[in-house]
Length: 239
Image (cartoon, rainbow, N blue to C red; front, side):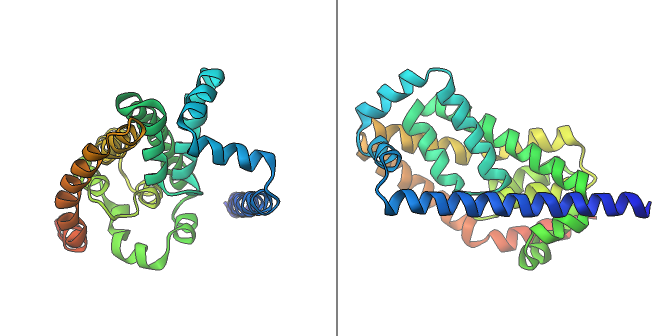
């Protein structure tokens, strides 16, 4: 047992340092591209500035375009290099409302399951290092949760750190398939909103974007403001 613990500790240390090193390298490389105004940076900037050019590139990439996007969505759950809201919006902008929703959901589900698996494999000791003390004190009760409804509500409420929560559910007794179904369904409403906003922005329907955003804000703001009370009630309902 001590030998297994040492091997696991070495593995955890290797993964953490490797992930941190890759993130720092990515940030440094991106900064260098921007400062030097490199051709690759200008290419990326043009993708966001010229919609016709963007559509042309997507057609040239073919099947690689959705695969790269799905991988990006999964990656932002596991290591969170960029906000999930940005990638969700990008999916609708690039692929349209329905297809963007499908691609985003696939990527988010894959990323969530990987994070869940990492938490289950490496255990509570690793997860406590990944999760901040504030989140652990507020959402630590998840590690004793088994209910699908709790998982669904957690992923439905705006403002909660859903990506980090994947690791917490990984060390809970919740079955893998229950987490997969409940977390995916809980993410869909928010993902659909982002995809719809991106799609309407790409088509120039700015009035629809404004109306959709207003409706979402009216619904989401109360949930966001009372999220701590909702979490506390969920905590008390857990046996």
